[in-house]
Length: 209
Image (cartoon, rainbow, N blue to C red; front, side, top):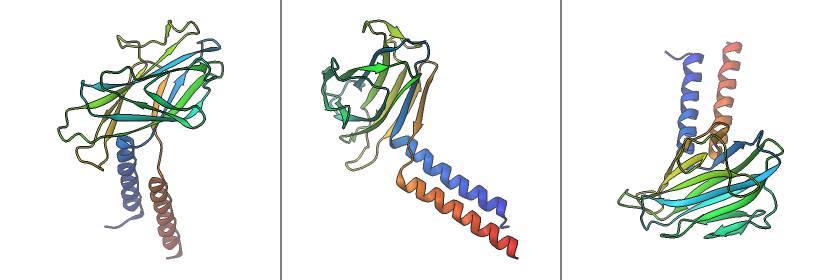
């Protein structure tokens, strides 16, 4: 039986499915709470093969909030800039890392990340993005990480099985004060607006009846 309640549930289920797919393969926003960390320090973002393999992948970093000067930044297999965005390549056997100054004084730092790269028909290989924070001395790890490497967050990237396909991501939060959220893409917003418009239309027709 068709009811407004059932229709609303169907629309919300559709939107949830769309957002779930986005979270699996779209752009993610990473936010780190830096309250109590002092005024400044360093962020370490690395991309490594997991497990070791020769499938090339890239992590594109953008929308930096409270990142400091690029002077003194250490880039290994990283291209780009703070203004235009950085790209880390997981070069096989290499040290693939962005070590950059950040400002802790505003209480948070954040950035967005998306992944791309070669397909992996075997389904055996992927990459892991690890994020850690250091004090101004560049050696003191910050945060209550539960990981042996001191990382606050791991994001695992699994390439598509076929060329041109879409891979998937999964996040493992390893400390408090860390959030990872999916960034809705244009089609998701269009679906949301369309669903809300349909709900409004059904409601107005029911009132007019």
